Image 1 (tube, helix red, strand yellow):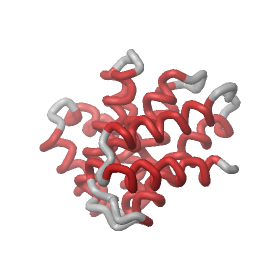
Image 2 (cartoon, rainbow, N blue to C red):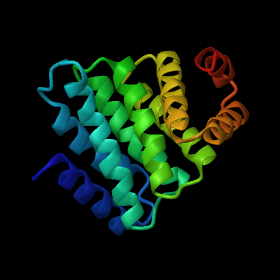
Image 3 (cartoon, one colour):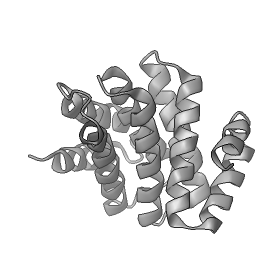
Length: 181
């Protein structure tokens, strides 16, 4: 089975089992992500593409079961961010990339960009915290990632994401200023 098929099975199984899924979704996605990242050594963009592929597949799967709301997206990101923090992949690059991919995938699934950005950043911080990592660096990396994703979408997306993050996560304002210079 491919990574995409494994993550889809985990997402669909968790959501069908308990609705919004909550911790079941975090756990299911986290197990697949941890398994996929075991033995992955830091080899440039190849290693980083694995977590991004996990995010893309997980959010696409959420869309297929009609669960692209903020809570579901946050739970998916939490599980993957925790796995990245525990892996040999550079956490800064890994979180930046999953945050970018998270926002882009949520956009493709029709999610509200502002809500998705906040969910991705909170999920990244939660996952890194659960793994015992540096949450300040996770905030920096996740905000950078979602803003990079927003830049790929449109200038309006950057404004929407910046406003939503600034309102919901006060600590993000300083990071937003640095990233958008």
